[in-house]
Amino acid sequence: MKDNKQYQKNYLQQYTDRYGRLCIDNSQIDAELFDTYGVKRGLRDKNGKGVLSGLTNISKIESYKEVDGKSIPCDGRLLYRGYDINDLVKGFSQAGRFGFEEVAYLLIMGEMPNKSQLQEFKDALVYSRHLPTNFTRDVIMKAPSKDIMNSMTKSVLTLASYDGRVSDLSISNVLRQEMKLISVFPMLAVYGYHAYNHYVKDESFYIHKPDPELSTAENILRMLRPDKEYTELEAKVLDTALVLHMEHGGGNNSTFTTRVISSSGSDTYSVIAAALSSLKGPKHGGANIKVVEMMNDLKGNVSDIGDRDEVKNYLTRIVEKDAFDRSGLIYGMGHAVYSLSDPRAVIFKSFVERLATEKGREKDFALYSMIEELAPEIIGQKRKIYKGVSANVDFYSGFVYGMLGIPIELYTPIFAMARIVGWSAHRLEELINVDKIIRPAYMSLAKDKEYKPVED
Image (tube, rainbow, N blue to C red; front, top):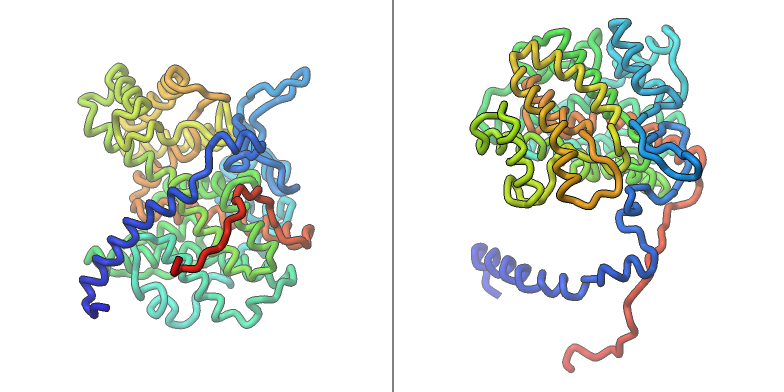
């Protein structure tokens, strides 16, 4: 064997290229067999309805109404612990409050807090919002990565080493661990970005500590920006984004991951690390990045973004796999569950319009609105669809983050800062109600084979 690093690298590349094809050949399953045996790929039927795998009191999604025994598509609704998301957002917005903390209390504790309960909860989050001595230097700043989700996962798993009760599954201890992680997630993400921005991109380095008097949304902007400054509207829009991304029905991939890992008896840090790994996928939490990339490509290929016909032609080319990444997808349009509308996108749009006006981005907002109107028609003409197509919350979230000056590397981590609340609620519900490990069934198609020695 040659002791030459370049030779070894080339050998490994050639080996995996050659045998990767063998893996494909021996692992391919005839697509028709999934229908033959009634296997729902992705645990969903053709209408996007998921296979029933559990019960929950945490949240609910409505996208259809039963009329005379038939499922009729309707405008989407999202309920947190029975409360309509529209009412929750309207409640804290009209009162001039930030909503992240009180909605987090609602999801985790199961009921709306009164004033004293909300203050106690905020205090508990503040007292949890600190990292171990030298953790930022010794963990976050070491081996910084452009993939901030991976950086966060590393940090979460390392925090387990500082917890003397890491494997204690009592509900009070799990709640303590979850509140700790909810509190420090913004620090893990923003500090991870600053480390990458300095050591990899060679930019200035600064670390701002969170202010105990500020909300979660305000602290995110404070820690991210060199001058710690932000407008009230900026903070309120980010706060609303966090609330809208906080939880979604329990059936999404990262929440199901949370349930699966929790059912095995694993510790909170391992569970949340697994959920992070699930969320980072472009088919889940990374979807808004694809929207931004698509919009940038559109602007580079359409001479007048205000010309409806030009924009429509570009979108048609996307669906025909002749533009952008040639996937045939208009990113941000359509959802696995919603049909006529995604309530989160509907709520978010009004906040987006106000922010676009403040930032002088009215033309961009008009473009997004135009695409939201055109895309369903084009997709309906070019694709066989089983339910309606509408804008989802990811369609607007990337645009918002861009207006807030949030770097694209932090788009998915911001999703995680919100969704960890939902994960925490589902972990508690799983531990409280279910004592069996989740173990799905797979039908084996393998046939018996006669063993032969390697020499033969």
